[in-house]
Length: 109
Image 1 (cartoon, helix red, strand yellow):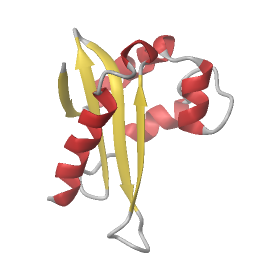
Image 2 (cartoon, rainbow, N blue to C red; image 1 turned 45 degrees about the vertical axis):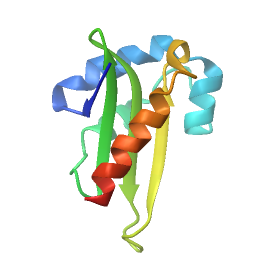
Image 3 (cartoon, rainbow, N blue to C red; image 1 turned 135 degrees about the vertical axis):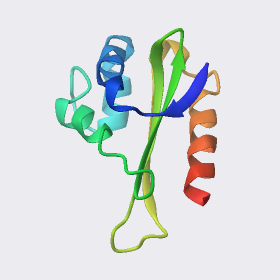
Image 4 (cartoon, rainbow, N blue to C red; image 1 turned 180 degrees about the vertical axis):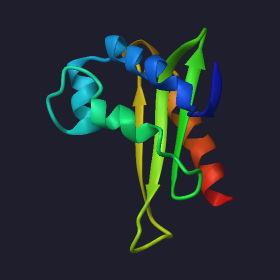
């Protein structure tokens, strides 16, 4: 497994992750009943500027198995929202923890 920053060509790989996400996982991430990763969310991933917004992917055998991201609060730049999503068949294997650790290192820089 490789953890790396999101790249502009990753849209289709991330979209393909939808097939490996249960309704429960999607609800836990988006707090709404959505059958797949929302198109607006997919478009937002490409807006990472690596300072106020960062997106990391966990990739295994060419497939995205996890996403972690933060978005800095404009009014309180020392605060950020954090979100993590791991494909159902990869949950409880430490993927989320590894993504958050890598993301925290980038945020600290």
